[in-house]
Amino acid sequence: MPFARLDGAEAPNYVARDLERTGKQPAGRGMEVEMAVNGEPDETGKTGPHGQPNADPRDDDLDRRRRHLEASLAARKPARQEREEGASGVTGYGQAMKLSSEFIAGVGVGAALGWVIDRFAGSSPWGLIVFLLLGFAAGVLNVMRSVGKVAEFGQGANRGPDSKR
Amino acid sequence: MASPDKVDPIHQFAINKIVDLHIGGLDVSFTNSSLYMVVTVVLTGAFLYLATSSRAVVPSRMQSVAEMSYEFIANMLRDAAGEQGMKFFPLVFSLFMFVLVANLIGMFPYFFTVTSHIIVTFALAMLVILTVIFYGLYKHGLHFFNLFVPSGVPGILLPLVVAIEVISFLSRPISLSVRLFANMLAGHITLKVFSGFVVSLSALGVGGIVGSVLPLGMAVALTGLEFLVSFLQAYVFAVLTCMYLNDAIHPGH
Image 1 (cartoon, helix red, strand yellow):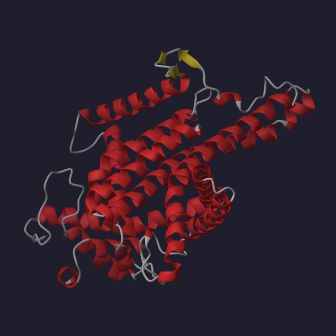
Image 2: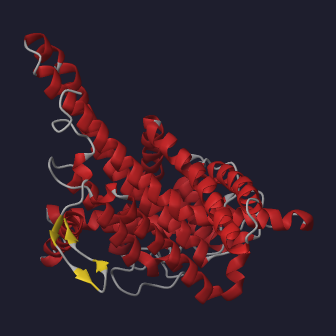
Image 3: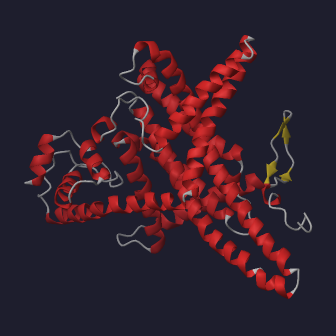
């Protein structure tokens, strides 16, 4: 029983959804994950307050069919996102723009910070020098982060679905 | 360039005052930029209002578009920031719609592109970052600053790493705004330059007219690319907003 397995094993929602987003698992298991996700409260909130996490999904035929539809829709979603990522990667230009703006922003903020510190502390030019170098490091960090080589803010070393939140 | 007034790729970004206003020594004139911002907001509001005014179980085309944009942002936000992030949905949705509609309005010839000015995009980015900072401080207090302290760093390196993390955090609004602004600016300039080639070349006679087919084709292709960029940049802006909000909601995991 797919529901029982995942619902029992994991904390609600987030983990399952992360698995869904990474979309790397084999098709059969991915399907189960999606169904479990959509068996849970989820669903936008636009229809008002919704059921509890453990609401029985089989109490209503229509409800179950709706969930099933959403599950199959959700199963398509990772592929679609993948394609979107691909589109931005294909342009290359967009990627270059993104990475360069990350880097320049880091250096720029470092330099600006150093300049302001110099101005108020009268330590010219040391603030500028030190903070320009720190800004350079921050720029590199930004770039590494935006290509996913370094963990996000406030996180440890590995960037798996579990450490994400 | 033959005559600079004819093919001036920068001219389209000029700010003109429509209503001159000065309040307390501040220049708060109503410019063409303000006009297009108002148009953007009115258009977005009117569209969403009309699209959702006759709510049907089987949606009309307009309602379908409105619902799709809702679902799109709602899923994005829930993916990035979890269920708690949904309280920021109005902010993210407004930002996305504003940027998207402003970009698309800018695609009309002779129209002004609001997002091609860095001060506009910077204001939007600051709105996001200030929301992140204030909400993070309000919700988590000083615990919010754990964001800047990565786990597992040796104590001696900590000041250095924290300084770099702080700078990296401060650079976020800059890169967020520069990215949107630079994309729109560069795209519109490129488009204008290639269109300008068509004009200049076709003034050279028959050979020029034949030759101008190449830049014309380029301009057509670039127009398509620019539509893609318009969507993509609005999307990227919204995604990054969601990611930053996630930091405010769950700092230090």
